Image 1 (cartoon, one colour):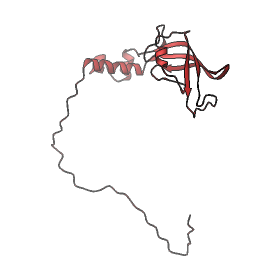
Image 2 (image 1 turned 120 degrees about the vertical axis):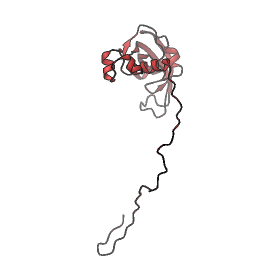
Image 3 (image 1 turned 90 degrees about the vertical axis):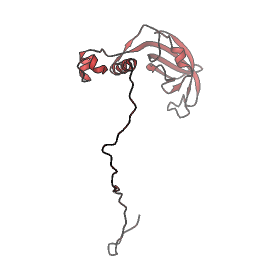
Image 4 (image 1 turned 45 degrees about the horizontal axis):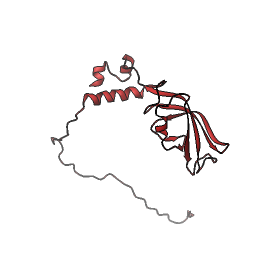
Length: 175
């Protein structure tokens, strides 16, 4: 840092960026060609279903776990007879392959069809920089016990739903 002497002249320079000025070409009356948007009934059905799922909730399912379901499970990582880490009622959405920062190869395949009470022994692996020192950089047995299988239940396509999205009826929503 330089020291300023109030008895001597002071000089400084700065740069100001300004918006360039230029003449616009004639743009009024130009024709713009846009490809037609082709939307099938199936596309509309999928869009409506996604909107309903965004406002849906998780409900317990008696069926075996399927793609996109959420499995609520207890897990315990061990080394010999020592428990390295564990968690109760952890939520795992099928499709991720990572449970609470632990990579489990083939986790989704093992959990497909799983129901409450099922227990699995799999191999887990933690990153070298995992905040849990007991797990960091290790590969270890991981015991999983399924507590619940939950499935996304879409919001009802009722008058309240339509009103929240500013539609008078289902036909208007689909348009």
